[in-house]
View 1 (cartoon, one colour):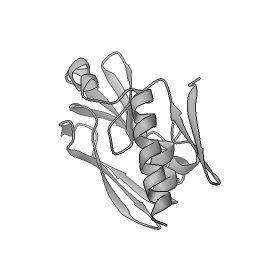
View 2 (cartoon, one colour):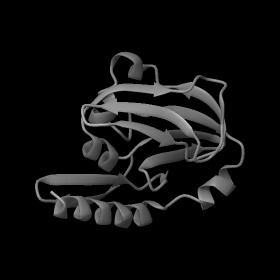
View 3 (cartoon, one colour):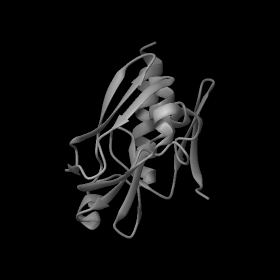
View 4 (cartoon, one colour):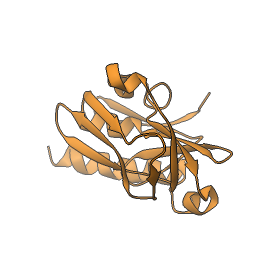
Length: 149
């Protein structure tokens, strides 16, 4: 079970799971060997609103780090997600087809997007943020958005 760093701003509490790495856009990567499960952070899903639709590229598709691998449509925005790792899509979360809202309900668990067979996890990991660094990055983003409301 993941542990979390938590940050509360006004009435919102954002959690960052400490057992994975993050890109600046809020896509997380959790490796088991060279199989890397990817999804979106709690901050990402709260910031962008209720997920209506999620589409991940097909199993077998080769992806490079920072290339789009999925699109999420919410009531607020459509977001193209950059892949945190290079490799081949090995699995896609089938729940997303009928229950895209699982991303909002459990972004670090049942709401995962895909499993990537990583080409070079060590190299990709070096380009991602640790949970602590992403936590600070997220806090700055949350504060800036709150000031602009």
